[in-house]
Image 1 (cartoon, rainbow, N blue to C red):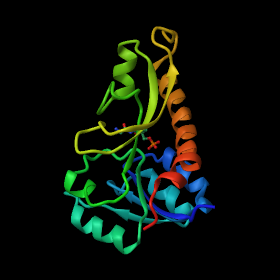
Image 2: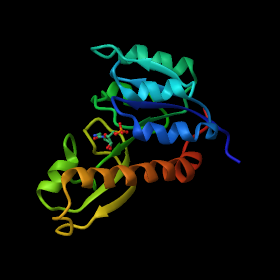
Image 3: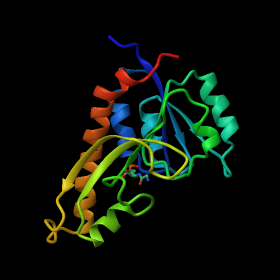
Image 4: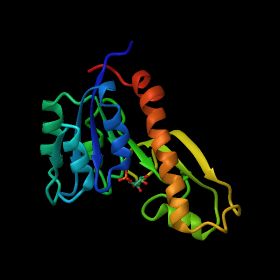
Length: 188
Ligand code: GAR
């Protein structure tokens, strides 16, 4: 069996995808929740699971964050609704890729309001997990799944579509933890 990992989950808000990690806490050696906002509900989720948290200042001290993560011997970083752009200088310091969850079928609809833009265009709607590179939402896609076929959901509201996306995201994060995480990370 693969050795358990220490993970840092980056969030900015609600944290429903963070919850997937928290519900499987015993799959990890430790978890640390890093939030770009003091007000993120995900911080409460972390505290309810006795998981350590770190709230970033503004502007973000990326070098200070690197040092904090190294001191905690973090093996992997997963961005689950982290809405800040991560600079290349931070990304390049890690041996393992940093992963990001995005609510579209990349390479389509990079960036903000991805669900709304795909919905407006009646386009295929889905979810991707990809590695982070300096250019926004442009790394290698490692998991991807379609949720709705284009032109098939005109009777659904954007909120209903968002809910379906969220369900798929939670399944995909779980799949990543089960299938992807243990096999693709180097031991540090
Ligand atoms: C998720 O839909 C995630 O795909 C999206 O933020 C949401 C966070 O939800 N991320 C991005 O748009 C990144 N570009 P959550 O806080 O409930 O996990």
